[in-house]
Image (cartoon, rainbow, N blue to C red; front, side, top):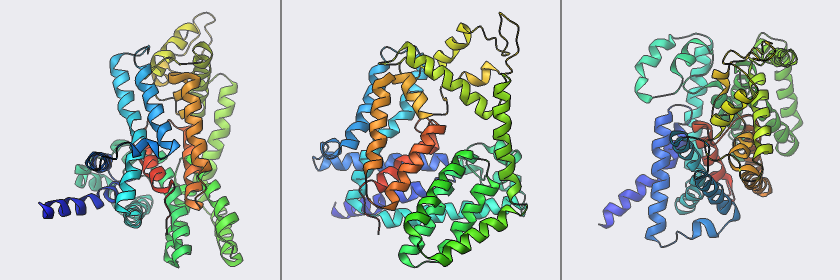
Amino acid sequence: MANIIINIEKINIYLLPLATFFILISTAATNFFLILTVFSAFILCIKNNSLDEIYKNDFLFKICFLIFFLFIISSFYTIADSNEVFDTLKKYIKIIYIPFIYFYLKKYKNEKLILKYFLVGATLVLLLSYIKYFNLINFENFYKAVGFLNFSGLSTNIVETKTTVFQNYIIQGIVLSFYSFLCIYIGLKNNKYYLHFFSILAFINVIFMNDSRTAYIIIFFLFLFLFYKIITNVKIRLIFFSLVILLVISNFSNNFIQRINALNNDVKLIQNDNFNSSLGMRYVWLNIGLENLINEPIIGNGTGSFYKSAENYFKKNNFTSFGVDANTGRSLNVSSENLITNNPHSEFISISSQLGILGLLSFSIFLYLLFANNNGPMSFATFIIVFISSVFNSVFYDNMIGLFLVILISLTYKVKLK
């Protein structure tokens, strides 16, 4: 019996490292190993009669349970149908993974192993991304060969993008932004200067090859923080800035410039009542979110309600499915088929629409506690990633971004990484 317990313990040590390894590779594998991690921590709590430690020891964990509790309570008065409610609860339950993963980390103290597995998995994807960008192999055949990994966005990744490998460009951009930061941080702390090379590769990939503007903002603030607080060597700063200047005047800058120009074009389209763009759709979702908050300010419309409230918004404003004002006949160049969704691409809009001011206040406290967790560069980097991602994406509604963030929060929240 003792041998069985020891073997289980050895297996448990590798559960979270494996989840981090597959973050940029396989959604199914990450889900599988992360759920096993949470389950093992739950069983461990029951076994040690320490389940109360999960929520009593830290206010952040109480807020995690409170937010999910509000989602459960609001499911009783929601305007959404049962399928939307269940789907939303299934997505937001990951927020209460955080206390259990933290408990798991306290038990096994395997932070170094987790970071090692993350670096290996992300490095593999980074190298594949460059291979794809320079068209060194036929990736359509490659995807067929590794189809068992069940990665997301297969057709999109093959046809429409040059650098994303398994996950979509938003997820890859956000994760590689943190990877780039982590490589420099660990490289400096442990004199592993080869990691600086991979950091530069990731930086180039995010800024000059990827299409995620969220990742642009994240990596900008991460490196601003790095150069202000961590990198004090003038030579390293000069080398890095020289490299950036060289890239800016090279062909690598074309993608970045195109994305910035696209942002300017999006603004012009909005001014002409054309919302058929990434920024335009977010503008419409912001208006829907503000209307939801005005109509139901305290408790919101309930769990999974954004889809229905978007439908009601279009009906109220007399928009047809072709984006035409039925009263004036003016074309609005926006399709309600794309805009009627449960994912408004902002966690602030998503939570305030569903849970009202109560939910928004709880989530704001959650973010403040992450910010107040003054535990070194890693914890501050975590806050930057969570906050910026939440502004431009419904991070906990999104599967992979949410899983990445709960791991990152659990890993860096009051955990000394050496």
